[in-house]
Image (cartoon, rainbow, N blue to C red):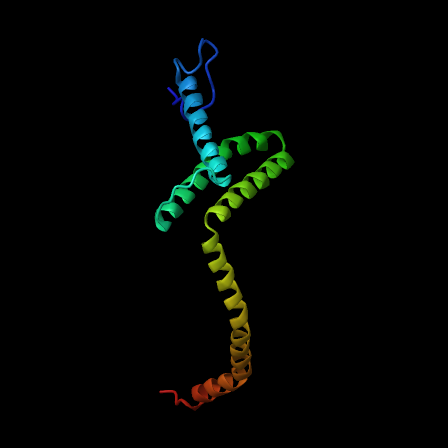
Length: 156
């Protein structure tokens, strides 16, 4: 017997499908998740809901809501992938943009710190390039020194 939670096939002789209210339970669960996550994203994005949580707890809530939104979109994206790759790609980019915008709107300080760190890395890249040039210029001398040390060593 196959697990109806895992497999999509329904026997032909089943009247309601999945031998009971499993389909109704699944639809109720997905509907509640969509309403909860969508409502939270819309209300917090509009500024109606302000949780006033500590920054660490607020970051966790943002991460959980973003993960739930992506998890809810995954089955839809997989069904669209069976229909059309272009439609699935478009839906993926729209989903990623909306979830990304939600995360950036809720955590702007972290993204500013990330941009500042990237600018610092770009400034230090010149020093790193100078180090690579120094190592490259020393390579022939190091090879000559290693070769001289090997050739000077007596063979026992």
